[in-house]
Length: 444
Image (cartoon, rainbow, N blue to C red; front, side, top):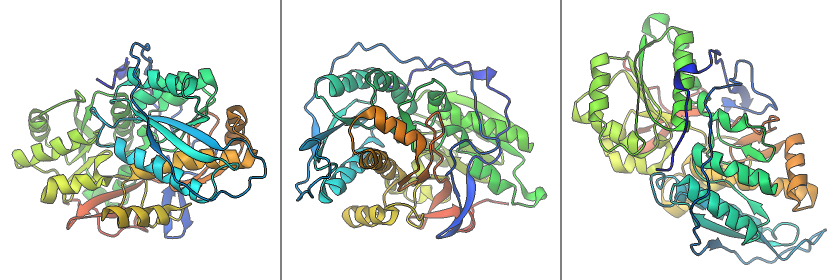
């Protein structure tokens, strides 16, 4: 199992989450985006869950996956080395394999783009990427190998909060900046680490847009009850922690609140319990496989509440392809979209769409954004000294495909957060109103 945690589940803090993201008018109009150096008013600041990184017990030395692009390099102002090594692990197999290839593609595209422009400091980038098999212990051993044996100059993060939590101490030990595109659990940023930087939204804030949407409805038509199913993982638990607190704050009755194993094979029993509880809406802390299982289970018992929101999966092109018509009307989080007016957002979108025949998921952009963070820090400091890079990132704004970040002291960034769904075989935005391409599929 890749996700292991020790959780004091019911001693969760009693904070009240308000808007975790800030409304900004730019390009497409008002959208949710986080650009501040500190959490917005009402954002969570503490939790009681404990993250325990596993001991390194496995040594894995598979051949590296590399991406190199030959380009005519411009003469650097300060030559450092002819080849700059960037290291990473990713979940290319195992329970998180649905997401890993998109992050890998984002890393590779960033390397390609940088090399096409002459590299960094006169050096061409080379990516060394290993498959961590969705396993935290394996990832720890591989990052040790990347730093001590492969001698990489820079690193980018793995997939999932639990694997990232396991890798953070390695980055701190060797003083390597660790940009993380898939590490949304707040606990990771309460550990006093200086080298970790997140481009993904906090898991606690995932449900904020749903509750913001609820507040725009006439009171008589607002959802009165909610079901909260979720995987027994650090990330998914954090999503539901946030949703649970928001539901209590807004007076939405929680009629179902239950976790299930991350490697679950059948969610019909869970969905039957949800049906018996008869909620107005479902907010599910899912990954990809269990999100698909949940939709199939809803169909198996011929049940749909007024609205179903699932985490992570809806933005993936495979979600609609695998589920077909069943995907219609299921909503989820979108942290990247064509019309977001950020750094290379549209270029990446067009490149992937032309290459694959469908728009990219947010996971690809999150991987690319990790590279953008390193690129800007290296260029600004004229150095590969990670201590200098870390110090610069704590003091300066960076521009990425997901938004403009001025990192909080603990390394948290606040990216855009929209809601989308599948409609007639395509992904469309349903929230915020300024960017909506279709109405929220709520059965009033």
